[in-house]
Amino acid sequence: MMMPSRSTTRLWSLPFLGAAIVAAFAWLGPANDPPAGQALAQPGSAAPPGGAHAVSGRAKLSVDQAVLLLVDHQTGLLSLVQDYGPEEFKNSVLALAATGKLFKLPTILTTSAETGPNGPLMPELRQMFPEAPYIARPGQINAWDNEDFVKAVKATGRKQLIIAGVVTDVCVAFPVLSALDEGFEVFVVADASGTFNTAVRDAAITRMAHAGAIITNWFAVACELKRDWRSGDGPGPLAELFGNHIPAYKNLMVSHHAQTSRP
Image (cartoon, rainbow, N blue to C red; front, side, top):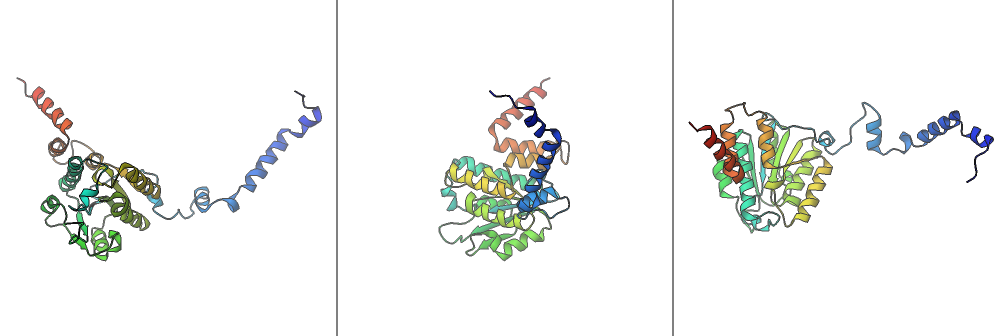
């Protein structure tokens, strides 16, 4: 290997390197940055569009700010759900609904073309929320394209949307993307949403997450809304809900009661 000469070494002195680095950064400066890069580099500049307020994933659910949206859990559409077993999926949907009821969240139900093969809404949901707004969309695939649905959401005055539905890649993804565009914080409940297979589900989840949605599950939603076991009515009601929908949790509670009830 040839050793550099003294003249070559002097050419790469620190002042020269510093000048070269400055020139390189100048060449890669704002004129060549994409819009999002400029926004990140310039304090006070406009944030990127499309739900950028939630992209960080740091939003936390609040009982006072959340509304529950149950979209197209219809008896016909349920037959399309193959990424979860039928009983497992139904259990997750009802657990999410029970969570909304426990925390007294405003809840909105909607269906799509229910007089056709999509079928009516799961009867358990109608029974659980007899007074909730019920939007039977005549044909709009995207619930956000239905004026009555959007009015019902905005009438709650809340900015956090907890949403689940069938199918994940259409009936959930489309309104999620629309709501993000309007500045809502959106929490997608993955295990209470179903579609044709896991590949389709994963693609839909990725699309929504990249747009700024926060992906979660019904158990996490319940815990995040509770925050502290000592709050509200204490641990009893939520522990009972968990026991009703999670067999392992019921075993935990049985074991706990057996230990605490010993003389």
